[in-house]
Image: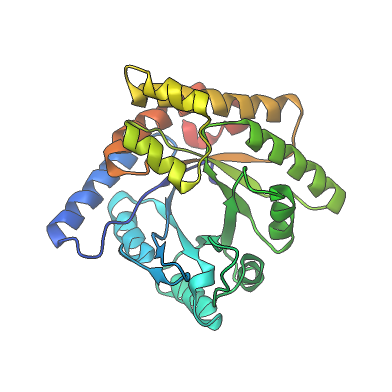
Length: 298
């Protein structure tokens, strides 16, 4: 996958007015165009689940949202879908074919189940990968550094055709380094080419943001949380923390010649952090980290 920096953009709610929709699209497009090097927009599928795993879609279809953004800021788009919610399984391939033919989308992220104890109706991640691998598209899966046996999961997904991974939001580098090291070793043992890994970072600006990203599953150690809470400016402090985490990961990859291509997935989680995410993105690009240098940065 040629992209080095992707920017994650959150779809608005279904009940938003046309005027609000235009306002949000214009605001996001303006911000994206002020970031050097972003070549792809990553659009998550916002879905909530009840206690038995039934989905509720509060936000606009990610493909429709992506289409509006693509027309406005002239960037390519990548859409996420929670594959296990496609009911029955055959609907997933229909959705994929429609996304390719009707929406001209060539980049996808397939997301799996949230609750292991629930039997979902749709395909598993590896089943979705096998369906997609003959479609001449780029598709990836999710990387969760804190999850048990994650390196083995990455291997299975790579073997089933996954081209890249986007990580959970990162504040702490230790588990990321550990899993990337294990994944590299296992790829060599299995004679697999490692998939590209997009490291996800999102600055936060207030206490509610901290609670929210922890609820989403990001690891924030108590020491890091206290550092954020005691700072005079949480936004600036969070940028320093995640730049330090990124530097540690990149230093490890470079020092030990780990054969895994890296990219960045920059998020803002909530709209009030959009400008903060832009500032973070431009600071990262200006660092010109060796493992992330691209012609796109110029």
